[in-house]
Image (cartoon, rainbow, N blue to C red; front, side, top):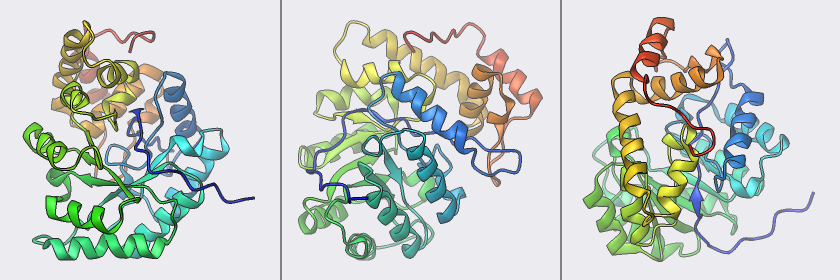
Amino acid sequence: MPAPEIQTAVPFRGTWPALLTPLQADLAIDHARFAAHALQLLAAGCGGVTPFGTTGEGTSFSVAERIAALEAMLAAGVPAQRCIVGTFAAALPDAVALTRHAVASGCHGCLVLQPFYYKGLGDAGIVDYFARLIDQVGDARLRLYLYHIPQIAGVGLSHGVVRALKSRYPETIVGIKDSAGDLAHALALADAFMPGVRIYVGHELHLPILARRGSTGAISGVANLLPRTVSALVEQADAAETPARLARVGDLLDRLRPFGAFAANKGVMALHSGDNGWLRVRPPLQGLDLAGLERLRTALEGFHFDPVTD
């Protein structure tokens, strides 16, 4: 099989949901449901999908599991060029293996978090980590999206790190996913680095603001549940319907917040599909039990999911 052609360093456009990862009873990844969920989101108009991000419990799965699940997804018909793969891992060799596999598979790009176990790191160590990752992958097709989510990782991404990496690897570093939920921080990144490094925000209520500044898309957890609504916030930021769409997303986030993001998102999937298998998460995360699912159902009363517009 010939290697995929080298792609130009064009950042992604549209909404690429941060895929939820369905699990079997033994907590192995359910490949069939994983691929089916991705294909359903693409059919709803999403630009692509992002497996194994934070929403997808990426760090809960081994290198072998993540490689096997991606291969199954591609074999089921999800186009590789419509995948940005979360390839971050605590150990550099694991991140290299995952990133190398995604690139060799022809995926659009990789979402990579800086080292996240050791705290108090200086910029030099983080730059060294990314440089070794890029050099060891050693493939000109690699398109890297840096990932800033300090409230989860405990480690942030400084302007100095971004500047150093973009200078050293101008064709490889194409974007940043800023999931801190801090609009001022996202706008400072946009002022400092766009358009050369595209800034994407994880907090859906900030999407129209960043779109007006030149952001072209979103990697969004809520897009698992409201793919068309989130896409409209990105692609039609100044539409007359934008305030109503923002209010709808905000309402859903408020209803889900007491349940925790992981349990709530999978709970909504269970309610949508009638399949309680969606409730499963990998420990140490905890999903909803049946009583919790009923509380979620009650919390969602009056919020009607529309398969045409959502």
